[in-house]
Image (cartoon, rainbow, N blue to C red; front, side, top):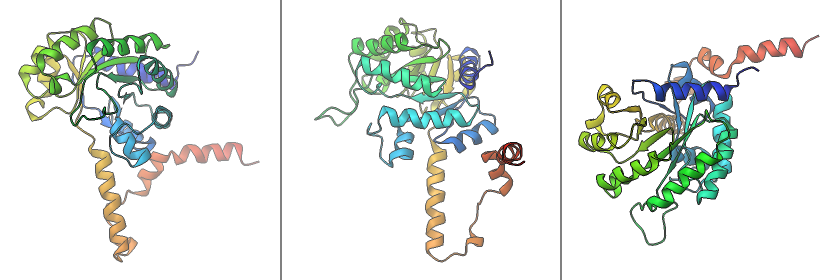
Length: 289
C-alpha cells in the first residue's frame, strides 16, 4: 500500500522527536505559508490556536474558534504541503470526552502531532489571570487523548503552563504525572530560566517542546542537551503578512500607483507555490483532445 501524506508527515515528526537536535518550527496559518515553509526546508510546521483564530475569525486568542473550524484549517494546510504539522489543540475543546472527539477530528485532518493543555479554557468567570485544571483532570485529558488515537504514529503531546502560573514545583509534579501516562512528548510554556528547564527536564525522559522561550533559553545546543527537540519562536510570519497587507492597502488608498508598490513576490515564486506547472500538465492531459 502506498504511503500516505499523513503517514510521511507523522514519521517526519517522530524523527525530530527521536533526534538529538533542537529545531525551530515554522509558524504557518494557511496552505501557501505551509508550502513556503516546506520549500525552505523546515522540519516541522506549527498551527497555533491564536493564529488560527486570527486567520479564520479575525478574533483574539479567546478560544472562540470551534473544533470544526480549527480542524478544517489544519486539513487545508496538511492537504497542501509535505510538512509535518504540530497543532495547538488548546484544552481539547471541552472535557475529556471532548478531547477524544478533538483527537478524532485532527487525526482525520492529517496532522502529525497535537497538544492538549491543562489550562482552564475558556477563562472562567471572575478570573483575570490563567487558571490551571487540577492535575487529575489534566491527566484525564491526556489519557483520553491517547485512548482516542487510532494511528499510533500520531504524536499526542501533554502541555502544561504551570511553570509560569503556579511555579516550578507544581510544573515538575505535573510533568511527572503526565509523563507517566506515556504521551509522546511534553510541551512546556512559561519557562523563563535555564534552572527551571533543568528541573523540568530532570522530571522526564520524554522529548520536550518549549513554547516561546526568552533570550536566556535561546541557545539551541543547550536546549538540545536538555532534551528539547522543538523550540517555538513565536508567530512572526502571520504578523509580518498582516503588516504587509495593511501597508500595501494604505499605499493604494493614498494613491500610490500599483507599479510603485514594493516587495511584491516574483511571478516565478507564485507559480511555484501554486504548483501552476502541475495544473497545466493536468489540463493538457485531461482537458484537451
